[in-house]
Image (tube, rainbow, N blue to C red; front, side, top):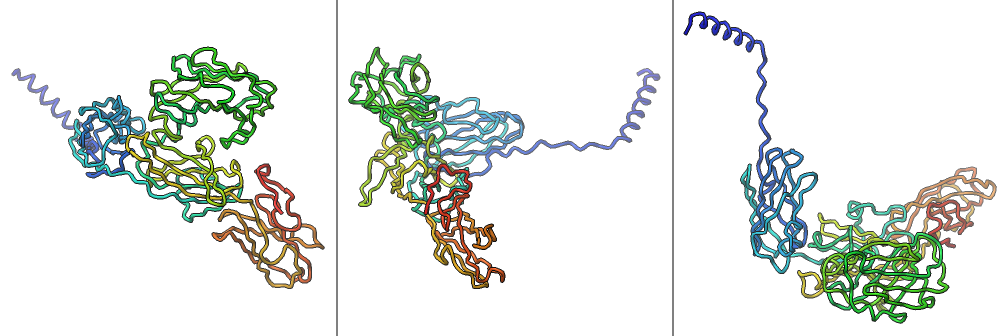
Length: 537
């Protein structure tokens, strides 16, 4: 090498060494560890949704393989948000037997399942109970065990909740601990069914019964009753109701020729309880089937409806030879609404896949009356997969003062059962009442304290306000808050000051602003729900 070049190299090396000496070393940041499965063992009940938590390199793609009794599938999962964590949900009810295996797999959040291959032959029923081997491959290689156990139907338990404490979520339902079968009108009746294996079965958010048309028997080519419901947007008396099954997709039931004035029911549901309150049958002039799949009901001098009422039409029909969702349309005096009806297992039962929910009145002698379908559009339904419960919150304002039997049934329309599995419990809706146990609503004060006790039909936890007045002082002297206990009673000690000794005091008890016990019982002071209250003596 040229001597001059040696000098240049030496000088450059010295400069680089000098520069590095003045720079603080930056430690290398290690990538987060990718350990694979979050646990070596997973367990779930057949029919529920299993969750597999996976740790993978940030932003990577991995393959999850599930292998067990007559089932082998492989899902490609993507860490789309690059946080190194993916949760894959496996619907054990949909897996194995649906035409497209992709329906059974999804990732939570923004992560995704890119594709699913079913490597085994298609099953005739959902996944069976038993052990399944899990494997994660790709950037990481890990194994785990998944145990699918048999689903159970255990018990049904009734509860009651105060009017101002409407359960908002599953957390509120879990907080209920003391069963109670008596519900005051205006309070909430809650029935909790303890059953596992419903997480992948129940369609709480898109229940078939909430469709424009609900087929009470949804299997193809069977005779059924179709129930049509539409909320009316304006006041008035309809003159023409037209139901069109061919709403652009050619799905048409057969045997509509059996429809006539004698075989249909039509009316208004004015209170949203699912029962017709105003019968329009006397106003039906004629029923025609102008073309295949179209039905027209002509009305004359029909009673007027109020905006918000539900128009209900029930008719006999033979389902078409098809499964899945079918578009339908309903026109009331030309105002057209397009919706759906479902055929097959997915559309069977109020909550789908053969899962039915009904409520029926019970006579004093124990005779159970005609059951009606419970719709999540009328009474709220909460599915809590963590504790394996399905709960119904009944709005007692939509129920008559009566005893009821609430039943959850998994019928043979579901491929996992051959005979119906049912859970039933009862509850009673009673008048909203309060009364003084001691003293009466008017008494002469002797001094010291006076223990005031009241009895009620109200839900434990209900807050009441006790106003103390006197004849000489018309304004309220004292106000106390009483809370109804588990025995449906409430009490408080009223302090009688020296200046009140010898006075005749009056007690007025208020429930949400309504005077319900005392000298002025029945007078509404103020109430957020006064229109829904019974003014009691």
